[in-house]
Image 1 (cartoon, one colour):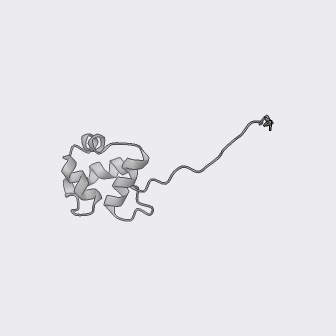
Image 2 (cartoon, rainbow, N blue to C red):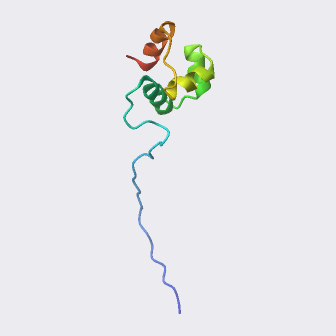
Image 3 (cartoon, helix red, strand yellow):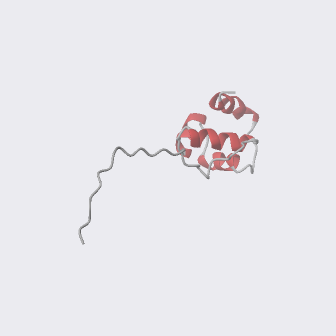
Length: 83
């Protein structure tokens, strides 16, 4: 039995961008907003910490909503978030 080969034309696949499960869907808290901004801009934790001039442990605590930023960091955060 011979197999016939059929020529295929151009095949175009389209799909939406994958959902990044690490990125909060509806950022409400400051920590969620920081994490969303970092992930959507494809920045590492270290890169954001360099920008904000803070330790990585502090950013982790902010993003997990365990602590709130001190007043001296609020302006830097607002500048980073663009708000």
